[in-house]
Amino acid sequence: MLSLIQAAGWPVWFLILASIAAVALIIERSVSLKRSKVLPPGLLDEVLGLRRAQPITPELLNRLAASSPLGRVLATGLRHEGNGRDLMKEAMEETGRAVGHQLERYLSALGTIATIAPLMGLFGTVVGMIEIFGSQAPGGTNPQQLAHGISVALYNTALGILIAIPAMIAYRHFRTRVDAYLVEMEQQSLRLADTLRGLHK
Image (cartoon, rainbow, N blue to C red; front, top):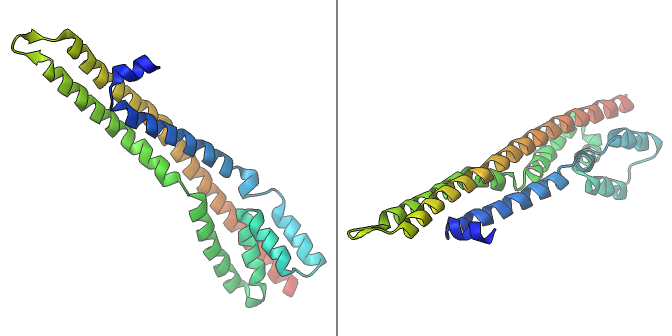
């Protein structure tokens, strides 16, 4: 590993830092965007059962809001239950936008790494090309400097692409997952609004 870093030259350190950041972001988002954490199974039915059985207290709403992103949306709906379906739906949509922003946290950073990693690799390639041209002297070519320049160019290009591919795959995957979660949250919030309206009839 150390020999590879030495062969790739000093530009590779930027790529190493980018790869560490990408791995950390992928792990963090994988844990934070687990379905059981965002959309706990059976939460809506549990909330509706509690609503039918007993009055909803502020303490219960606070616990529900803190339990998960879906719980936060449902708690907003219950807080605005007495304001009519349209106002309740509007309040849940506003909370849903805030929740969506929270779920998308760090995704822009991951997308940025996926975009700039090849450019960082290209920068290393340019540095390697400069070394290659520097090896050309009037008295002849310096083989050692020529070989080092070629290795810097190739290693940085390869590493930049190697970082960008999984980072872009993870970015697209997490974006798709967040979009699916938001659609399902919207469906469950509409079901809550319709069910509560039926209880008031």
